[in-house]
Amino acid sequence: MFSQVFELCCHENSNEVHYDDLINFIELVAELEGGEDAVDPVAAQIAACRIMGTYNETTHQHHSPTKGINEEEFIKKLAEFVFFVKL
Image (cartoon, rainbow, N blue to C red; front, side, top):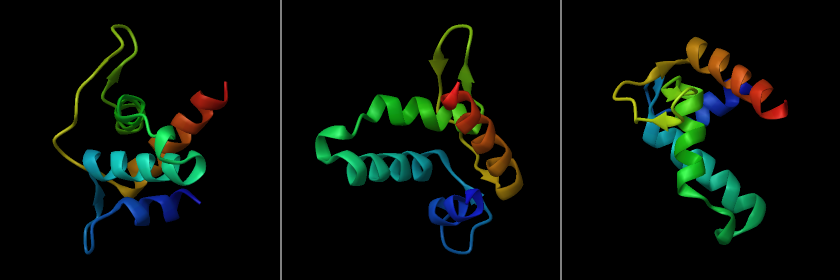
């Protein structure tokens, strides 16, 4: 399943997922599940940062990464995020 998410977030002919693409995907899923009012841009940014590994758990600050992550790294981090969310 995570490979399919990677493919959906990836640009054509790209081997990386970028921060903005991941935010767009998260917001799209939120809108499909709960309607336009369900989209929370800040929550989408934080989720994307957690997945991409740029969220600081100590200070609760996040910054947008400038480089993308490859499929292997994306799948690993997405699995960790899903586990974290289920706790």
